[in-house]
Length: 243
Image (cartoon, rainbow, N blue to C red; front, side, top):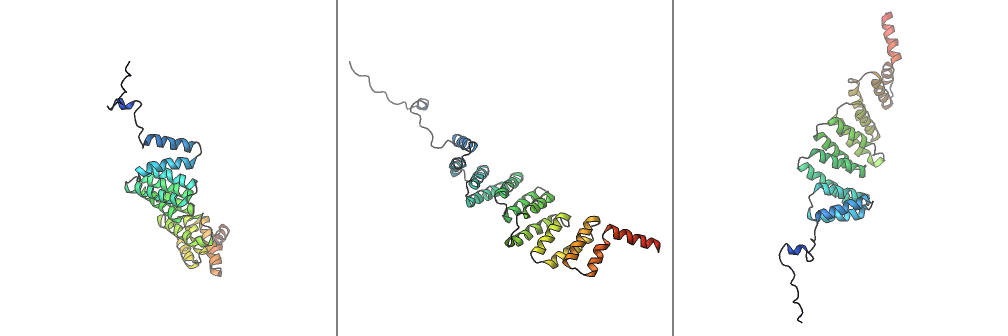
């Protein structure tokens, strides 16, 4: 009995979906799912490898760049993390997606708390949303990370920008003054306090006068400081009434 002729592999598209279907080399959905699973299991390196496979095909995908940036940071690859964060921020800014642009820098400062560039960029993004007070508050918060001697100029830069955003706001101005003093710019600090005197009253004025006395401990500045205290004002008012 003759043997049956060998079966020819199917050649139609429908037939190729059976045993002879070739798995695609790049399955985006599957790769991203694998990355999410790996990240959920606390395997950042494995997750990063998967995201990078997609980024090879989509190098300008800001959402994936952000995900990769976080994983780069968590696996101690700061240079790659910084490049990914900044690239994502540039893409969101270019597309006019201000909230996402801001969120990139908000994430960046978590991993780079001592980068004055990151804090300034976050403030710029916040300002673009029309909230200068929020931007200044971010700079004030960020400035507290700069405590080393070599960081003094960067701290002044951050607080100078915060002051520009909300001129003469008390907390920002006093922090700016302290940074100027630490950076040996006592004259600039004193001049700024003099400008604040005309805009302040009550307990805040007493703090300003006290700071001015400590910067220039003269009899005149001591008298002005004393006059700013409630007891001294009451005594002066009583003396005036008796006259």
